[in-house]
Image (cartoon, rainbow, N blue to C red; front, side):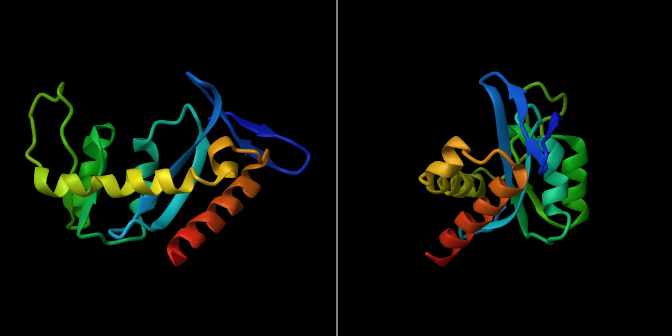
Length: 147
């Protein structure tokens, strides 16, 4: 991850296909409210932050898309006695079963991101410093929680 240091702090910026970007990794609870989040540079893969996001919780089930289909993450989810609702990648040698009916509820996270991107400061990342962007994201998540 590329961390650019300025006089007042670091920026969570990284190169991706679209240029310099920031990724917001969010754990959302069943009603669509943010539970925990992490900022990383744009080149950071999603699955690398998943274990950190679910470390302090004991969920009944973890829903995620195919990008999160990794043996290490699946092991840590089952170690918490939670149900794994992640579709297997097509190139997996042994295909796993998953609950397709419950997987439909994954749209909750997509709707959460659609709601927070209504805030222009989140969608365009006006804040240079990662600490300020993280603070504003926490404010937006709190506003969404209160709705």
